[in-house]
Structure formats: C-alpha cells, structure tokens
Image 1 (spheres, rainbow over the protein chains, first blue to last red):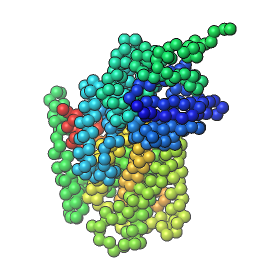
Image 2 (spheres, rainbow over the protein chains, first blue to last red; image 1 turned 180 degrees about the vertical axis):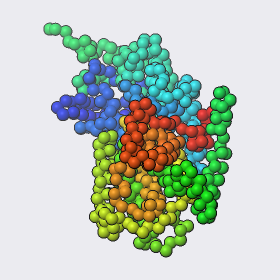
Image 3 (cartoon, helix red, strand yellow; image 1 turned 90 degrees about the vertical axis):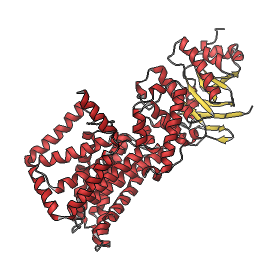
Image 4 (spheres, chains in turn cyan, yellow; image 1 turned 30 degrees about the vertical axis):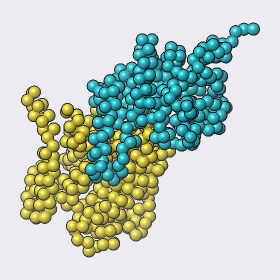
Amino acid sequence: MSALLEVRNVSRHFGGLKAIAECDFSVTEGHAHGIIGPNGAGKTTLFNLITGIYKPTAGEIVFAGERLDGLRPSRIALKGIGRTFQNIRLFKQLTVLENVRIAYDSQLRYSPLEALLTLPRMGRNEAESIAKSSALLEAFGLGALSDSLAGDLPYGLQRKLEIARAIALKPRLLLLDEPAAGLNSGETAALTEFLRWVRTEYKVTLLLIEHHMHLVMGLCDRITVLDFGQKIAEGTPEEIRGNKRVIEAYLGAEEE
Amino acid sequence: MGKVMDFLKKLGENRVILPVLLVVGFILTLAISQFAPLEQGLQSVLRELHLNTYVIALVGINVILCASLNLVNGYMGEFSVGHAGFMSLGAYASSIVTVKLLPDMPDALFFFPVIVGGVVAALAGFLLALLSFKTRGDYLAIITLAFLMIVKSALENIPYVGGPRGMLGIPKLTTLAWAFFWAVVTIWVLRNLLYSKFGRAIAAIREDEIAANSMGVRVREAKILAFSVSAFFAGVAGALFAHLLVFATPATFGIFTSTEILVMVYLGGIGSLAGSIIGAVVYTLLSNWLLPLGTWRMVIMPLILVLLMLFRPKGIMGFRELPWFLPKREARRKDS
C-alpha cells in the first residue's frame, strides 16, 4: 500500500519557537495512524499545517501525489482531507442537519445566479443535499436530533457530530484531534469501536492525535511520537510501547 | 388559546396566502399609481392615520435597505456601517441615467436606471468584499466607515453631479407599485440566496470561519456574494429614494442614514427576513408618527434602542423566521 500523506522535513517556527522541527513521516492509505506526545509537543500545530491553517516555514506536505503546502484550507479540504478540532468547532447556532449540509455542500453543483433565481438545478441539488445529509445523520445515530441546535447537544454527541460533519466532505483522510478528550474509559472503548466502524464504512484513512493509550494502542496500525516538535520515534504499537525514548519523553529520564 | 395557536400554525404552513397577497398588493399599488382618484382616496384615508403615500413608499425602500444590510450584519455577522454609501452610489448612478443620459426615457422603463444604480453599488460592494478577506469585526467596521466618508467626499467634489448641492431635478418616478415590486424582489432573492449552499456558507462564516474553511466552504466566494448582493439592493433602494425625494445630495447619505438602517435591523431582528420587514415597517411608521414631537423624537428613538439592546438584544425576530419566508422544501421538511 502506498503513502496517502507525506510530511517531508516540515518545520514551523513561531518567532524563536520551533513548534515543529524537520518533521518527517508518512501515512499509509487505509491505516489508522496515531500521533502521540506530551503536551506542547506540536501535535495540533502539525494538524494545522496539514490542513493549511498555518503555512510551513520549510518542507513539503504531499497528499495523494499533490503538494498541499501553500494552498488555502478550503482547497485542502476539497482535495479530501476532513478534520475535527481539539476544542470542538461546530456551527453552534445552526442545526445539526445544517452543520452536516455545510460540509456536504462542496458536492453540490450550481452557480450563484442559479441560487439567486432558484432555477431547477438548484432545487434538485438541494433536495439531494437534504436527503444525503439526513441519511448520514441516521447512520451516525443523530437522525432524531436533526433540528436541534448543534450547541445544545451534550458533549459526547457534539464530538460525534463533528466526525459526521467531516465525513460529509467525503474525505480520503480524516484528521481527529483528541477525539476521546473528556470521555471516561467506557466511553473511550465505545469510541474505539465507533472509529473502527467509521474507517471501514466510509473507507477513510485515519490520522489521530490522542492521549488515551488504550484507544491509540487498540486502534492504530502505526504510531508517530513527537516531542518538542521533533519526531522521536515511529513504529507499530508494540514497538512504541517498549521504546526507551518514548518512555523518557513522557516520564523523564532516570538520573544517572 | 389552543385553537388560536392551531389556527396560526395552519396559517403559517399555508403556501398559497403569501403569493396571493403579493399579487393583490402589486395590482392594488399599480392601480393606485395609475389612477389619480384612487390615489386621492388613499391619501385621505392615510391622512386619518397621520400618514401619506410618501411614507408608505419609504416603508418599501426601508424594507429593501434593512433586509439587505441584515445579510451582512445579521446572517454573516460582520458590522457594516457603510450601507448609506452604497445607497448614495445607487442614487447618483440612476439619477445620472434619468437626468443626464436618457431624459426622455418612458416611465415604464424605470427598472433600467434602478438596475444601473444597483450594479454600480454592487461593484463597490465587491471591492469591500476583497478587503474583508484580510480583516474582520471591528477593523472591517472601521473600513466600512471610511468607505462611507470616501464616497461622500468624492460626490461633494465632482462638479458633474452637482458637488455639495447635489443632483436636482430628478423626475419623480418612484411609485408605490415600484417600491412594492422592488421590496418583494429583494426579499425573494435574499431568501433564495439564504436557503442555498451560499447562504449556509455565509452562516458558517458567522459561526466559525476556521471551521468553515476546513469544511470546504469557499469563504471568499461567499463573502463576495454577500457584500455584492447586499450592496446591489442598497443601490436599488438609493435609486428609488432619489426618485421619490426628487433630489440627491451627498449629505442625504451620511452616517445618520446608515445608523437609521442599523436601528431597523437590530429592532426587527438580526438573521431574519420577517424581522427585517417588521423592523423597517415599525421604525418608519414610528419615526413618522413621532415627528410632531420635534426634538423629543431624538430622545425617544435612541431610548427605544437602548431598551431593545438591554432586553432583547437580537431584536424582535432574532434568528427566527416565519414559515412563509422559507422555501417549500425547507418548510415541508420542518413539519414532517
């Protein structure tokens, strides 16, 4: 299997701070790839670089053979990269259905003029968008909540809706920024199963940042470990578990 | 009580009443504009209510201004104070057509100069949209203020359009029928836009621009569309206003006019077409009825605004819509 996403020697500096320093790794198509590391290791910065919210100071990001660095976030999203956010960024004052429809809208084909004059093609597209988005919400078990405001949902369901919204983009790669944050261990186990289902059902490659080791070790095919913006280890869950540098990064080195 | 609510619900779901009302309204306003005895009859009725046909036409114009500003300030969540600037561009551009270029134009072709006014304003709106790519919120509000001042001082210094004295001798072409027609067109086009993928994009920008971007929303396209369409209808309203007032001076379209439109928007309710109509109607009638109070009017109107912001900051309708203003597919979905 080939690399779907390649991060080649990417650096990002904020003034004197090297948030990401010569980071280099690739994500294989079909894999679930975990990114772990202590707080402040640069994990979310890496996501923001991949999705175009930040531009790399140096290096290249290649997705399905195309350069992504320098493109606007919306262009990158349309190339097939969906994402969720660490602190949930739903459209809170819009309904659950509208949240999903906004992501699905990229697949609708009609021009501004057709919209302003409500020409037939627009009506057909809109009907399709309502049907497809509703079906997606049903599949995610959120169908009954279609008309609730997204901001009124309980926390766990907001996380779920954020994933549904990203899936509505029909992405090939889904970036999940701490999907289990704030969940207890039972909920985390359910989330692991749920993510497995998402991965097979929607044939999507997963790249996820996570602190819950049960989830990461149980779900991921491969793990990259970051510390102070640098990759310090990479391998299968078993390899990472026994890696001395990883243990040091989390717990600190033993005194000599 | 339950019976009344049921009746109102049925009324709201009825898809026939509104189109019928609109057709009847248009025929009625057209008849009034065409036959002098009808107009005199209407005037005498309105006099009893301390109103006149000028105020009624102004209601229509203010509906256009209020709804179009709501697109940017309510639905998109920016704060534009430049609406009077777009209005003046529309007023001047259309007046150049009717006064200087085509003075012998038949009255029935009045839609043409109005569209010219709208297009000129929309071009300015497009330029402002380009600036909105980089700035947001307070900073963009200041840019719209600067835009308003630039337009005003530019018009004051162009002799071709009369300088500070403005354009005089503009024909009185704005009839009740035209005001009604353009108000309906505005609401219809805005509704079509709002309940399309572009409208959802505009709402997504208001809610969270970063998330919108990451969901593939073409943010720039949506901003261009919002600013251009909003400015287009401000230009249309300006054209109608100039041909109702029969003159246009740079001072007519200052910050006070912008503020008045803002008050209508926040009174009626942000993010609502029904609210825009309510805001424009209530504000226009109220400010007309309070005219005899003289200076006290300037105390009461701001006081209403203060009370509004304290007790109902989103306005009367804030982010709610009458089902009549939803497209069929959305209205049907809601009750199934």
